[in-house]
Image 1 (cartoon, rainbow, N blue to C red):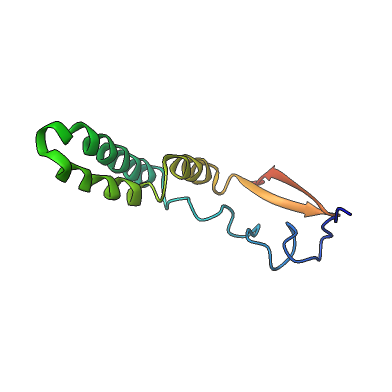
Image 2 (cartoon, rainbow, N blue to C red):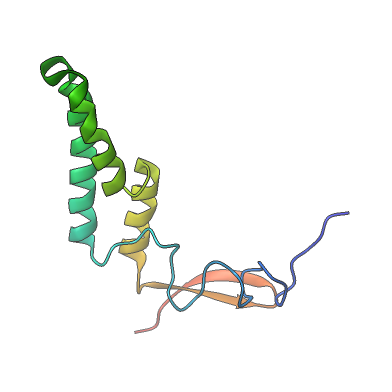
Length: 109
């Protein structure tokens, strides 16, 4: 039998034990600023591309750049892209949950 989450159940979007909160927003992939996030992306993608492009010149030692790229991207290119979206939207959207239904709404300024 399928179960439904109620607003007070653990793991439901509005519950205190859920992984995302409406106060901090995002899941932890965001950076402090868009320029900082773009710099991390340039370092990450640059390192990954260089790691494989330099193999003919430097040999297998060039692959040591790959972990630098992965760390800069915080795991994977998709993680970086999610973080970019979170960084851009930070402070512009808030999550509002009422009666078990959550929506993203613009912050009134």
